[in-house]
Image 1 (cartoon, rainbow, N blue to C red):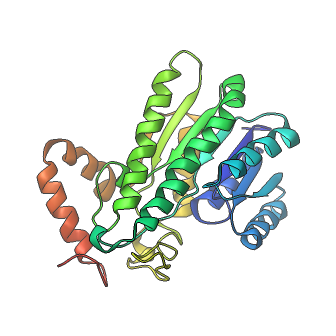
Image 2: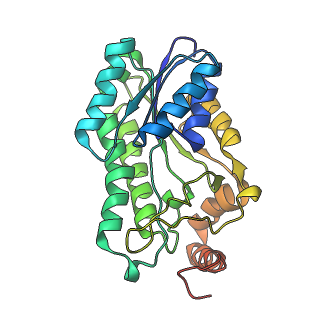
Length: 270
């Protein structure tokens, strides 16, 4: 990865920032983007302190023009793009019947359309380098999670989009990876949207028992280098659940509902 140019959306915290550290350690040139300018500047400073060459770009991936700016500024600065990691995303926690449609729209605009916009503008440069497009999805992109309709819908959409993009580029050398980290210890649950569009503010899960962002980042980085097509992390709530859902979807749905209903203040009936 030495001197390769890697773009990471949602790169100011969590898995995104951890991946920036991983690629920086491998001597790549790292571009991170996020909406929060203060947090982004802090992340860039942290990376520079580690002697990592980094470009930070304040951007909201739900805005087409911001996504174009990420790509244009990267090429203007470094002259190429080798890896695009579509990591920016938000979650939600609310039963659909209690959810304002603006919440579903926000999830799709950031998670799905952010991936589409950035990939569209980066694609010509990635085709030149035979580079990698990465979509950070979730087990929720394989199994519908109750209380998270918009989140699951956006992750299913990303999976369909990138699966098709991979098929279209069978002969071009473009690498496409779908990475599903499973439940990972990040701040995504704290900033998840409730049914009225307000922030949840706290996590309903025991973060200490989840995979760390750093471990997830190491595995995703390795999968990109090895040009894998699919990466599913965690066994019980990831690989096993997806496998069983192919054969006994009704049972998996029942178990998923019961599992999610046990969360504190769950929007589901236990």
